Image 1: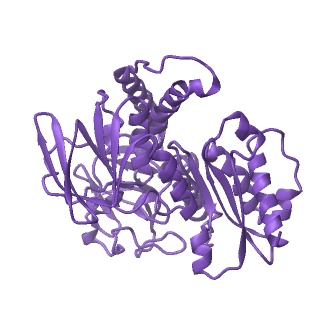
Image 2: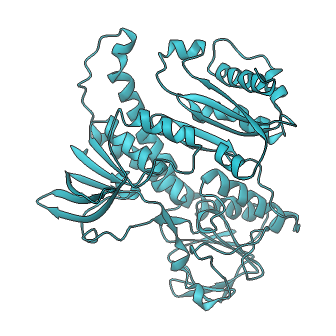
Image 3: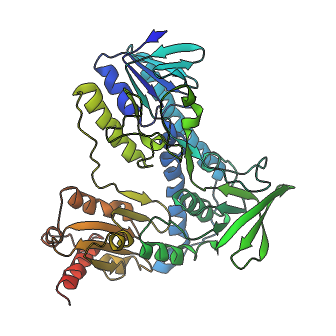
Length: 460
């Protein structure tokens, strides 16, 4: 048995605990069964954005004629080189983490599958180890739907799509969440004919007006089959045949060179042999944790995707920093307090949001007003020839507090940050109105939305 001060299972968000603890002189074991850096670095946020940015550039080239710039939209994409560059970049970054760990005498990196033998005893590669504080940050993996014939076919998940060196002529995407629309957008913009199979609606957790605007604009670029359920998959002679059932009961067969499955994720807790412990799971398989991120075993904590409070890298970073501060440095019993948790979808169009949706406010019977301004109704929107997008702000009627903000359109992921900042400081509509905005920058759309909310409060 090898004893440590801290054991961290998972090297994504868990990195917020591993290195800082070692810098304090604590003996730390970092266990990782895959490449160091977790989902975000190796098969998520970073490589996907490195693929999406060239896709956005491709759209700008294709649509240059809108701005009276004559060009030849039949450009060539060296997709193999693009994927090779992305893979090389993330691999080097991952390897640099390992090199850093090896240089640190307080960190033991164990490359292998962690399995619990009992509450505080873990086995990795035949070696037993224990620690008074154990942090589980094993993340999640793509969920695979139970579709007849799917198993055994060379379908892609997000993992394979980000390492695939061949740009297919056609691709079917099963799924309508942010992973589906981001990767589908990237492949489509770079030359693949993409068909989306959508059971109910795109981005179902977004504000309803955002969902409808997204569907309207996104459907201009891709073939979208709404209200359908895939019932069977067949793969022959390098071609996928997907049978779908429509809402009216009719069936249809679709053909494509590639198939992308993007129907959500499942936590990796089932890899840990938790049956040997008193660590409880939720019905969805996430770690059951309290408001201090502790599992049902004292001294064992959960964070990130495997805990399921939020499924973002920025949220697990926040959780890791909280755990390091309260369990390692200060040893405090204070509960975690999440500030307004933002998110963004890096598709075309971009989507970003923070706080409540209008539907949530209605369900909670909160008295509110809406301030909504289209991109086209702004100076920079005119310059962009904006044909989609808006900023929507939700304001509590009595206090004028900002309850939520939702943006769809160019640079939404950047634009949302001013509203995140205001909400983080309990800002009000007056705060939005009492600042000077640079003219003619995009944030003037936020100002215009705030003015619309003010008019709504006055009944104008």
